[in-house]
Amino acid sequence: MILLCLIFMVFLIFIIYKNLSSRSIFFLCTLTIGWILAYVSFTLYLSKFNYYFNIANQFIDFGSGAWTSLVLRNFDAITIIRLFNLGIILFYVSFLCFSISFASSLRYNPKMRYAYIALGIMGIIQFLFYDPRVNLTLQDFALEAEVQQLYQQFSLAGDVFFQVINYTYILSSFILFLYYYVRYYQLRSIRDHTLYTLICLIPLTFVHLFIFSWAPSNLVRTTFSKSFINYVQPPMNSFLVEYRFFPIIALMAIAIMIYNVYKYKSNEARYSNIDIMTKKKIDTASLGIRAFTHAIKNHLLAIRSEAEYLQEKFADDEDALYSLKLITDSCEQSFQSINQANEKLRQITLNMKAAPLQNPIERVIERFHSSNVTIQLEKSPVNVVVYIDEEQIAEVLYNIMKNSVEAMAPAGGRIGVAIHRVEQWGTVTIKDNGPGIDAENMDEIFTPFFSTKPSITNWGIGLSFCHKVVTAHNGKIEVTSELGKFTQFTILLPLVKRV
Image 1 (cartoon, rainbow, N blue to C red):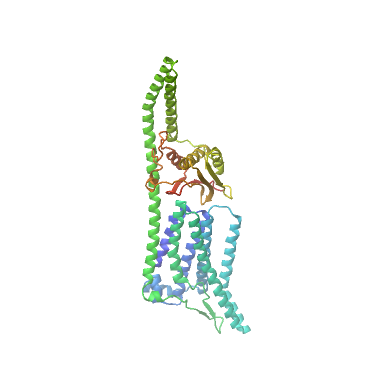
Image 2: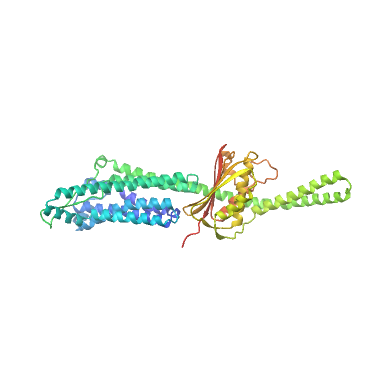
């Protein structure tokens, strides 16, 4: 049963590694290595002294022959205990380091290095506190100096202290995950990744605490002879095991992890399919609009030509000239709309370069200085540098903000623009307090020619263009809305990686 958990832990690394920073991958690997090391060395310790075969067999699922073979092997008990303590301590320290690196992502913070160093030093101190040779030396000294009671008090106080420390590591880790989930709840991809990682770690933690809640522990006792050491039986939790509950618990833990991995992957596949379908619709619309505009342009040219002929013929008729001018102006506006539609749906060529994300944002905000909408910009405390085509991204931001301004007209409103650095992404969040979008329209807003605006000059191509540009940057664009309250667009663009 535990073997299945171990296999699935390794599988879990391959499932979620691509969304993690290099530090997170490292700590996730050391967490797994620590758990495997603790499990293997604990098995060897039990077999070394033939402890608890009937109970341990339900954890380990060994046959009597394999168990007897381990019992007969002459493993060094001190080495086994050291490996066991190392695995347990590595699990707890790596758990907290993983949560810290997950929550801090790619933000460069020199102080984070000191946190890892402090946790490492605390782990080394804990390892030395439980080292069997250190404890045997202290026990012999206490026996000779007749201060055994003082040693026992010291050992008990250290046990309580380090147990509290280890449980604090676990509790702090889950608090960090929950904080990260709440903070970036509006970013769907980040939210889902955090949620499913958190839920997968919960059953793993439960199984660990169920088996090793007492560990690490001092498993050696000195005796009247230094050549003879008394090795302590570990205080295994036998209640649930004796009543055959543990296999059920382990199966449920594995089932929860498998289900959440499946759910996470299916959600990712769903959104990926939506992106693929949107791209196909845009490509199809691009082909259709080129054929449509070719035909309509010929008719518009004929109309404009006839209007210009009539302007010459009725040069003295002011009323006729006024009407004919309206016709020619309408033709020009139609040509412009057609050209804009063609430009936005044509194949996009990007001129990529590393640039601060705030550059195109500030330029776009300046274009709305005369509108009746209040725009608030929240900059990131660190410089967010991404690979972008500034002109194209500026056009994307302009389209989104223009939609917000039009949605809140004529009363006006407020638009909040925020820049953040989250994991491997530089993010731009644009949130207005406008009327919102109907839930039934949410999946269609990036579809070409879909629009809720009544204007006859609107083609419904702006958001399709935004989707096309952002995905061409290998980025993501997400939208959330609540009718009557707000609409929020979030653009995620890949960060420039530090070398």
